[in-house]
Length: 339
Image (cartoon, rainbow, N blue to C red; front, side, top):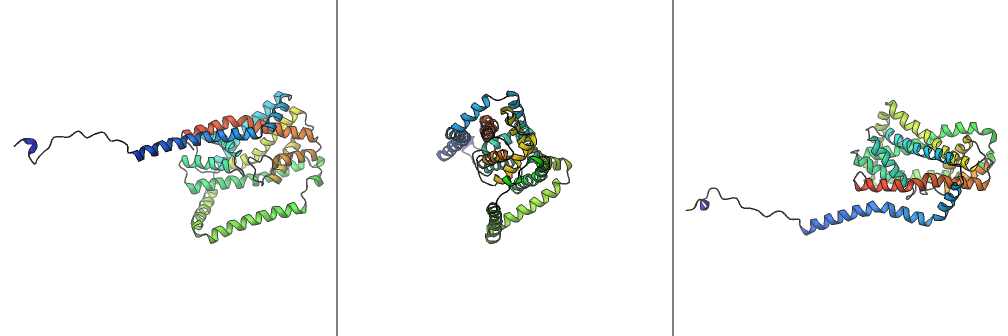
């Protein structure tokens, strides 16, 4: 009997190489298509928005063409510093250390997404994806976003008081004071929001456990962060510096056009406008905050036409010029699976 026929060892047989099943091939193709669509979607959305709002963009660019270029360069520098400060605040709201370069890139991408979706949803979504990609647990990442959103308006209050004292002699309070109906509407909206959240947490059982985990994680992280001076400085100092830098950008654009207001008055106008109209869920605050800015600067003694030109120029400098690089960074981060 041949050796190979015995019950012992058998000769090795050459197996055919494994091949992908049709289902796996279709899933891989669908994954590549999905990544391509997600990568190109921000560019398509930004292009559509630019086409719909091209008149404002062209008007602002034309006005900036006659402006003092050195003041515009200063405004651009303030804008760049604003992104750095935003990255510092994000880091200050999280115990884990994040890679600085990728963190800054994520904030540039978040700025582009913030001008597409309302109420900062785009910026928070990009930041949440970035934090998850860096291995931050979901509860801690969402707690970081909540802390970031809470500290920013709280840190704005002492800055607003400081600038209120600085411009008090030239301010006409009657023109800026909200009427009774506006105050009632704001109070009613806040009460309705808090009541809705409380009812959802208490009545919808599947939401109760995630809500409890979120609150527990948020309180723990707040305690940890406030034992680290570096995190405290980044979180609270950055949140206080952000509106001052933003107002400095507007002031630089206004000075380039000959706006007859001081730096303190322009920063105060931004603080008032963003506080009064910041709750309106418009993409990037464009629209309500712009109208409130023009109204506040006119109340401080600036001409209406020049105030409007300043706000338009500011939007071109801080939205439209950085929008293309921010969108390309967003697409690159998606393509590299950072987001």
